[in-house]
Length: 423
Image (tube, rainbow, N blue to C red; front, side, top):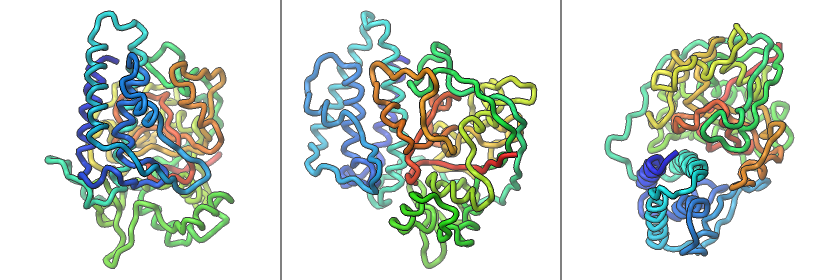
């Protein structure tokens, strides 16, 4: 990647921060994240710490160096003495000026492009983090951009079915040197055998999940793991986090507004791993493993792997909802041109898909030299793999080897899930 890609990422960062009113900077809409003010400083600090030469604000370099992902707690109490916004903006602007000058120099080291790619992708990933933080923010503290896309209208339910995928092999990860850039957890490539299994052709919708709620799924401890049940009880969780109950019925939270449940009924159900697992048990099923997901997405009856579920064509608007083309999820199954060889829909876009696989290294894993803790700090059995991307995922992060991961009780991700069954 080049300076041009970095500048495009900066431009989008500024547009996303433009959602915030002046009163919102020190808000902490997600209790397991820092306030917005941290991220205003974190993105330039990350870029400077990896690409800069020297240090002109070592205090900011350290303060904004790394975010948080506290394990075993329900909330995080942030510091209360964050620097002023103007000072952080001055830091950001100087970082950008100096990096622009450095990266424009023909003498920039040849291996610098890999580091630039790391910085760009870090910024792109935080675009999605910022959007689901904005979604959690009180709507009164947001600014609606001009020309913001309208939410999709309600549609009739699309019939789903379970697709049988025969035994075969799945390719995980990527060969080193086969892609321009990848994070350490994407390497090396691994081919694994996958027994025959069944998998839902469509993700679970809000309407599907409502049946689980009405049937008492949140009140049945048999459907939940021990730690998941303790979390559900402690937090009084009795419906998906994005749902609200009001006098006139249920509503579903979206980025800039809440919508009637009927309008969002066919959106994918965005829930935590624990809730998705409980639903799957209620259905007599389970979440697919990481290998099963890849087999369903890229495998073919002839035995060769496709690059994408639909074939080898680069991802485009007809294949799925991703790359910020929409302002919310779409009804499931809206992109039949993105269907896999087995007839499984929507494996790329519209929501990151939970798998039943803990986030772990592939055999032969080597940490990033410039960022050794990026993945290794989370190989703890307390995070689970998500795949495929959401409507807010940049297209460069849709590559088949890219892996996302979150804790099992984290309900804020633009996620979805589907059920799988052993045959």
